Length: 114
Image 1 (cartoon, rainbow, N blue to C red):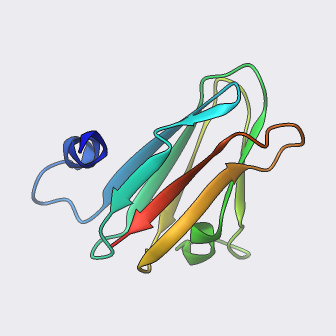
Image 2 (cartoon, rainbow, N blue to C red):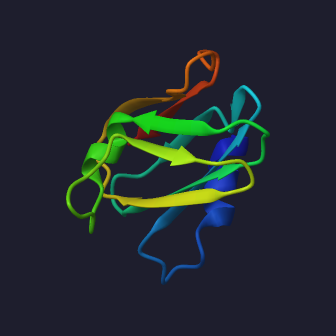
């Protein structure tokens, strides 16, 4: 329920045609680790690194990015104290996300698109 409230709070009013999902990378964990979104609107995925280590946010959901050139990437590298964004047109499904950096195997979560 807290995840649903987080998403409702992060959407900026009724006029918004995007859903904003903010995922924080810390040292060896992502918060939140489970996110629920609708397939009705694009997702502005914001990954913020609040840890001391470099992270690489990886998910198959990034294959549906829009406005990317030369083409979509399946991962977003993010340095300490930095953030990265991607705009995604979601397709219903369950998408695992994780840190692709060696030694960060415990950093994972799920994005559920309904």
